Length: 375
Image 1 (cartoon, rainbow, N blue to C red):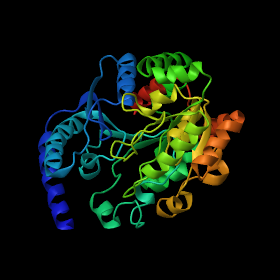
Image 2: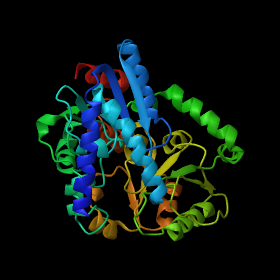
Image 3: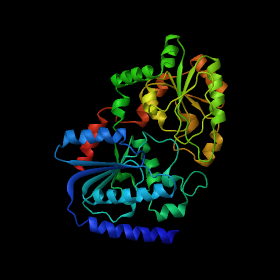
Image 4: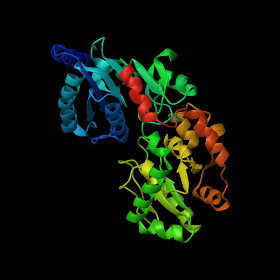
């Protein structure tokens, strides 16, 4: 396998050498593997860059690596387009691991920014879990693919997060800067939240009816577990909340299994998780970074952590989970329903959590654009 990877990298660098014959332009290229459409963060950052520097060209390249041989072949052709724009850009911005950037011999005048796609860090990722035998990549494969190499500047949401990112990416502390993803501007905008909530109520009259009846609306965004079906736990939560009159909305991972809808549960596919939070009275988290988005919105939080001990053994966390999560930890659906029924929430603790882990909460798009343009 390593021989094939080495050969592939040699071919990529040979092609890249041809692309480097073209001149470098005043251009920012933004690359993501998170979506096949332009991500919200990149759309907002693109607009901010154009506002700050109208003469600077921008190129946005978003594509996931499809499943099967066909999807991987298609992504290889997409990489050729990436390589041309990397070779001819003064700035490259990533929100995830990019095979091309990490494995090419970059031009010294090209500055690569890694802004990562999550607001804050809870569960471990990247080099922190490589070779751990759980959810991490094989350590030899990670080395062969030069995981997270060639980053010049890496954004973190607060100074307290630098050690975690340093471990995940393998860089010293002086390589990091403090900033926030552009979507923080929307998350902290009361006007945006109100407008998005109206859109959601128009799409789902059952949510509007629940509000009119004085029922609680809870949004549950479970973490995807590799090789594990948690649909039974979702059903348990749904049944418990249904009994106490809470309307449950599930925002699942695209390849996650969910049970057949029973009672009043809604499994939404029309809005992003961030958007759906705008309509929530309570947000039910487990181990994902959605907790930071919900905390920035000031939502009531609880944690449905039915597999906490097992997950900690497979993946582990950068924070002291039991001590720091800003809400009660529930092992069963009945416990979660009881927290909601008794209104056992602590808004001050939620605010403190957001302030601790997200430093830039306003003008995030503008400040990030300025940082990128300055280099």
